[in-house]
Image (cartoon, rainbow, N blue to C red; front, side):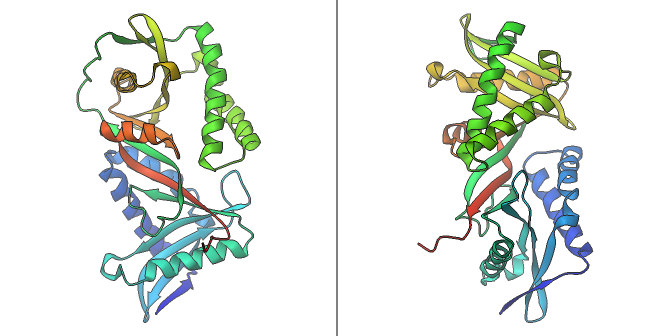
Length: 304
């Protein structure tokens, strides 16, 4: 029978959690400095977790960690960890721990429960909808250019129009994923762009591209260098809707990878929002692995 005991001392859990996270990050292609830097983000929140040991007949077989307040939304709670030691997997402990975590969050008024998973293994979270994925790929050699397609720097005039479109698209993606409502998503978009691009087109360590096919603009890109050690983050590599389905998506990835190498970095990373199956399939086809996956479930859980 599974029992859950809230821990007074979470030291052993934190050490185990960090070891598992680092292993998952490196398995997804990140080198040690980048993996350690990504883990630092999780470390900043560990003191907020309530951690329970998952017990079977007096033996600890895993851990589950929960927090009552989610990012940007007090109505959401989070599961920070749910792990069963491999020797004890498949005996119902995962389901019992998940039931305990969902009940714990519901008792504190949560209307939504969220989880951030390392890698593509969803464990007991198959019923949770995908809100987004963090994908990455190490670039071993300069990518082969796509014939007839080039990437050039964005002009100031182009930047103004691009910014308006990007802010609206970002807000739409957040709302579509279910993370926030439309108005909250728009406010978050305004805040995030103001913080990320305080000097606009001239913000240091950012590359803004226009993708052209035979001299005609067909898409654009925005990349942040130094996002993690050796890692460029692609905030956007987009092909205009009227030009989709022509193979330009792969060309945009090539332009982003070339800009990454030009900045002296070796890994390109993206977020793809839940519901965007086209982008997920593209990233998978060109070798971008899942580093983290965010999932969510409305509370109370439907019994239908």
